[in-house]
Length: 181
Image (cartoon, rainbow, N blue to C red):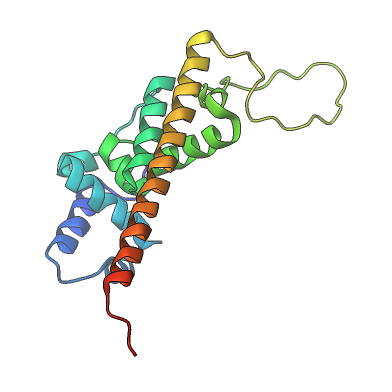
């Protein structure tokens, strides 16, 4: 069961969009735990409309390609996880988790976990916690991981180039100004 109904969310978002009250003011007025929740609702409405606030009762399975697409958009757009989640119609926590798993484990971290209760057999030795199984990557997954790494390198190289261009322009402007005597 969800904590807030779709009608309540729509009411809060409409009140925010009137421009008379801030996120924090709404959170205080309606006793909502954090303003980031309201921000997520507003971003969702801006991206997908009020219909997106309807509560969905389904368990979705996302492909590795889709997860990589979301991660790539997150890294290259410069937007926060709330905006990216609204753009793709998913939860902000999913975006954060996928980015974290990808950073820690690479494409292997994006594979779905085994569902259900774990099988306990044999002695009760303490086991080391492992989030993802060590399953070798398929050839396609290796290529996708390499492409994602190259895209990330390209992004940072472009950022570095742009910074150097700006620095050169600033230094050039400083040289053209007459120096005080």
